[in-house]
Length: 443
Image (cartoon, rainbow, N blue to C red):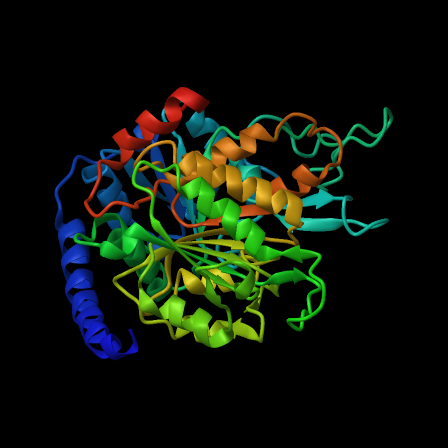
């Protein structure tokens, strides 16, 4: 495999140059009827500075996926929508207004917290005796309820007692929401480029494979001999089984720290993990392990932001699921943010948590997410994610582990991106309608 890397890298670099030129020229010059915000099913809201880059994606969604899409600038939203107490509330008011027209289903927030509004949701679940304010794009997806019924400008508070009923938070999402963690034109262009390549590249043999990277979770300093309390590889096995029910199930490679206990797997180290990330040999990467916003822990060390920035697997972009604390913390530099903006590689989209993730709920959310993706070919990421959130709505008025998880669960990507495991392009909108519509009532 190592001997084939040079020629593969040459092919990638040549392919990336041609792909970038062809896709951006083609989509920016494609004539299409202008989609008005009132008729859009897919909407990208971004600072005016980034509008030309995101117009390329809107054209792609409209022309290729038959999903009416438009770009609306944040400046227009803030000047025209019913005014809230801050920009986040005004943006949510605008989304409520547009959703009430009966068309809007998918929203991409085109910027990180330095250029686009963010809402922090209050949870007293953790730490014990204290509270956490969690960056939560769920605020823009769940449009019913006040989110601050007691008027103290602390959002998302749970029911605690009869005389402290919380903030009237409805956590049943109406919209599928994703975020582009970008703050420069160059990052916005790269973000869109990755999505277009993932959606349209053909042939794309890497899409027929998935990779599980998993370390021993507890003890966190496992030395290879101590008793294991919780092995991340067990979650990798769950996820692989869920993918096995897909109409075109991918071949799954397993790279585990405790590799000897799982026949057929290979050993997880920093070196082997970087080889996987750089190879372009998978359409889906699942990472299960410790980490922070700044790094992925992989057994004998960590993968850093700089190493993610250096990835060169384009145009063979993949999707990433990160079962790791704060990997999607878009209010700062984070590992998943770097994966979807790496200049010459990385991911076309990534799903993770903006705060701490607890193993039991992380397993439940990702396991169900992958089962939803397997409902049919081409299920859209936003539909699969929204369906998981809906399944955990019961019991939400009070403080629960699931409430904590839902606040922090975040898609750094376009919710209208299809999940591909086959080698040929697909009609993304129609496939998703056939997959999740019957189960979850997508309108």
